[in-house]
Image (cartoon, rainbow, N blue to C red):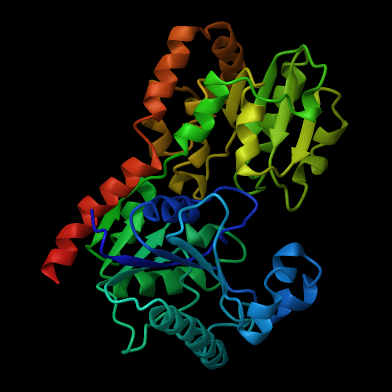
Amino acid sequence: MNRDLDIIFFALPRWDGNYSSTSYSLAKEFSKNNRVFYIDNPFTIKDFITQNRSPKIQTRKSALIFGKNIYKKVKGLSDNFTAVTPPLTIPNNFLPSGYFYDALSSANDKLISMTISRIIKDYDVKKYIFINSFNPFYVRQLPEKIRPLLKIYQTVDDIAQSGYTSKHGPRLEKNAVASADLTLATSQQLTKLMKAYSSDVHYLPNAADVELFKTAAYSKLDQPNELEGNNKKVIGYVGNLDKLRVDYLLLKKIAEFHKDKILLLVGPSKYETYKDFGLDKYPNVVITGGKKLEELPGYLQNINCAIIPFVCNDLTKSIYPLKVNEYLATGTPVVSSRFSDDINDFRDAAYLADTHEEFLNKIEEAIKSDNEENRKFRIQFAEKNTWSARVNSFWEIVDPYIESK
């Protein structure tokens, strides 16, 4: 274990985002043994104007405007973990690629590089690794004076499949992979895609905070308000209700086919796509909105079958879902669509469906066949996929590169 190395982590998800992320989960685990400086995805000047009243802007105002109080210790985490707020950047995603886009990007790169230099000076950082986690829009090139032992890029989704990131993302990610010392990919499909740009690409899949989610299996937790007084079986999805990933037609069929059960949807929904399918009108559908990570075990404890109702497309093909290990860690039966090579690795612990009809029937099968022996098996399966295990795998990948330096 490289205890004498610091890690400067620049990520797309912010540390106080609305749902769990690969970047933040890894960074927290790293901080148990290494100093970690977790640099927020920058807010742009446009963000500052349009979201000025949001808590995330309000708590960062002095850092964003004046560069004061840019460091924050996060309650409940190791003192090794420092959240860092960079200054406001200039919005440029609306521009086409070319001179003006590159000019504004260069100005933004300087702002983030200044933040990195400040960390190095303020904390007397000597030996360190720089990780850019799925944010190729910034620090495209580190200045000469910033010299990490390793420059690592991490990809967590197919960047070409999301509306916002697809405009400049594929081109910038290609460059990020080509210029990194090595690249980490969270799914088998992403590993294949990134190997077109570099031979130094390694598979490092997602995991789960197994100890947190195991509390649902071994402790009596408070019943969520949304399920108070319920005596029906509950089918539950916990995660971002992303319109590009979630199969809303399948959710509608579940609500109609399993009228005797509750369909519980827990997670943020930016576009409220569920309304387009009328799910908010079904009497057996409960939609809670986003919840904190620490609240999720309480919901899963009251779910009889957890589902991953993803569509099968180019985006989901590249996903290793965080939630599958979170589900399994609670002992809850899991039914998922067969959307990626990675989900196939869970065929012994979860029910995988190829069609909507099969998905509907497997929910009933999963609930009826649930027993203590199966629950223990699912928990043991999840215990192999902890963030601690992933950090150990990280060092196994990275150590030879460090030694070669």
